[in-house]
Image (cartoon, rainbow, N blue to C red; front, side):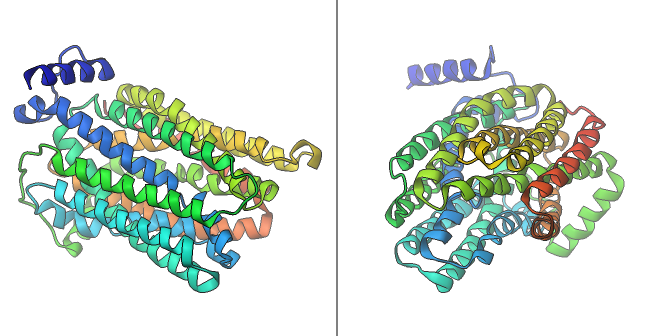
Amino acid sequence: MAARDISQSRLYEWLTSDEDSRLCDDIPADACRDQPRNFFLHLFAALGNKLADELSSARLVLPWLMGAIGAPLWMVGLLVPIRESGALLPQLFVAGFIRLKPQRKWVWVTGAVLQAVAAACLALLALFGSGTPGGALILLVLALLSLARGLSSIATKDVMGKTIAKRRRGNLMGWSGSVAGAVTLLAGGVLMLFEDRPGNLALAILLGIAALGWSLNAVCAARISEAPGAVEGGENAWDSIKLGLSLLREDRIFLHFNLSRALLLSSALALPYIALLGQDQAGVELGGLGVMIVVSGLAGMLASPLWGKRADRSSRRVMRDAAIGTLGCCLLGALFAWLPHAWSATIWPYALVYALLTIVHHGVRLGRKTYLIDMTGQDKRALYVALSNTLTGILMLLVGAMVGALAQWLGTPALLVVLALMAGGAIASAQRLPEVE
């Protein structure tokens, strides 16, 4: 047992470039002692979560599922807003509830189990759903999955803040993204072998694997050693709203961060439109989906460790650099669409842009997650995370609706230029944020 602990500590120190795993900055001594073990439990939990997210993606997999069962086109446009806002909007209302729990990992476990059940339901719909009723059921299950995702999201960050020290968190998220990207790459490669076959069974298998991923997430979360925390200060939903609004007035750094995060939505909003341009060339066949999944997995595998280490040095700079990348990818996607058809008659130019934008989007997510966790103390971390996510959920619905209207009016290439301008605003805003590491 002792030898296994020593090996685990050495592997932890190698992965984190940490010469002494017993040195911690902002977590209790007991949590510091358990940090190597908790690090690997967080790593495998995040692996399951990230793999499940990729294989049930509202930007790629679910649109293909809608097409395979013959659901109306307008339903496809609701997938991303429901997935994102459903996960973010309720978080302010559950922050006070989570605060009343001495161990927040059980809230995380509950959310992971519910997501696993929802993914299993989506797998059944891939086999037996059809037309408008099937599409409506997919949207309903996706809404339930997103609410469960929001429950896990806030608890995950709170537990990480209690069990993993500063300057280790970005590295942890980076390694988990790399491993998940490699597994997703394998899944996409298998799909490419299906070429032009629609394959409802293959989609059901993908969603079944996603259910297993969230099951792994739940098991690992349950085994994390989390010391009971303070339960004072728990608020009901209305009190949380009032306290959150007062934080926005009083904490100017927090307000500035949320402005930057809102402008960084441009990366998330651009991804499905780049995929849509590629889908115009490939159709709804699994071969085209496999290409997109492969480039997404490869991009995640390459990008996450790089962003993670940089985020531990300066998450502000990661947000700024990711905004620069978003601007460039949006303009490149629009350029390909405006070139003569012979230059962009296959899915590959758009797959390249999608891969680059996926790398950039990893930077956006890692940068803002690390910044938010590092800028807050343990006492109010859950509330800060919940408030920021709730604001982002509201903006996702509003901005997403506006972007959809602009896409209908201007067309996809012109919309990408608008999103590039939005990313330009994110560059300026993130550059002015203070350092928190």
